[in-house]
Image (cartoon, rainbow, N blue to C red; front, side, top):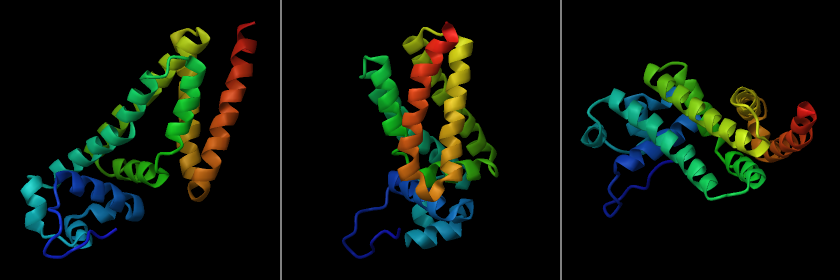
Length: 193
C-alpha cells in the first residue's frame, strides 16, 4: 500500500501514518515498522514522520492505541445499541469476524517484541474478554466466574481461528462463531439443570 505521490496530494497526517503503520504491520510484520522501512514504503521523508511523532516509541504507542480505538471500541459501541442479549452475541460474532485477521496477528507479533505494544494488547484482550463475560452474565444469568470462563474460551477460539486459519479466516470465522453460539444455546442451559 503506497500512498500516491504528486504535487497535489493530500498531506500525510498523523492518522494516515497510523493507518499506514497498521497496514504495513499486517502485510510485512514488525520489521516493516522500522523507521527507514516505514517512510520508504510510504514514500515520505523522515521529517514528515517526525512532524507528527516525537520519536519511534511515541509512534509505536500511538499505533497500538489506534488499533484499540479502531478494532475494539467501535464494536463495543455498536453492541451497546443492541438490547437483546442473544442478538448482541450474534452481532458481536458478525463484527468480530469482519476484523482484519492480518492486522490482529500483526499486533500480536509486534507485542511479542515491544513492551508498549504488549501492554496495549493485554489491555485490549482484557477489555474484550470482560465485555463478552458481562454479555454472557446477562444473557444466561450466569455467575461472573462462569461467564468469564466462557468468554475466555470464546476469545481463545477467536484468536486461534485467526492463527490457524489465517488464509481462510473470512470463510471460517463466521461458521465457527455460529457453531460456538449454537453450542452455548444448548450447553449453558444443560449445565444449569
